[in-house]
Amino acid sequence: MIRTSEKRVSDSRTEQVHIVMPGDVNSSFRLFGGLLMQWIDVVAAVVARRHADREVLTAAVDHLSFLKPASLNDIVTLCGRVTYVGNTSMEICVETFVERPERNKQRALVNRAYLTMVALDEDGQPTRVPRLLLETEKEKADFAAGERRKQNRKRDLES
Image (cartoon, rainbow, N blue to C red; front, side, top):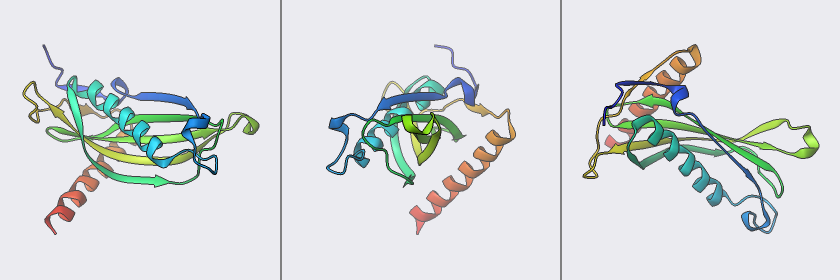
């Protein structure tokens, strides 16, 4: 298989949409946080697999903030993108938005998560991933922020 040495952020961008159903909520009719975490992990894995063209695993969840709840019958949209690429790892940002029919389809950000995914070769060992071609100022800023988060994670592990 020929592997591309460089990929765009747009090459792996992923979106997943759900309607919050009765089985997805707690007794307060709010989406279970653990279910949202599962959806986030799946979106991050799809983004990473599209970028790496390989199997991946979740190595870390760096940041996960529940800013607002998602409730029964809400439309939940998860948007994932690569923000930073190292040698074998990728940082994926997954943003979660909620639409409520009574709000005229306005989307509200309810969650932002950063996950580190590692690409695996055929033997299950970490393997190189394509570089990230940065095309916009936003992508460049995301990459710089991802690099800082990676350095902070490394520093925290050494402490």
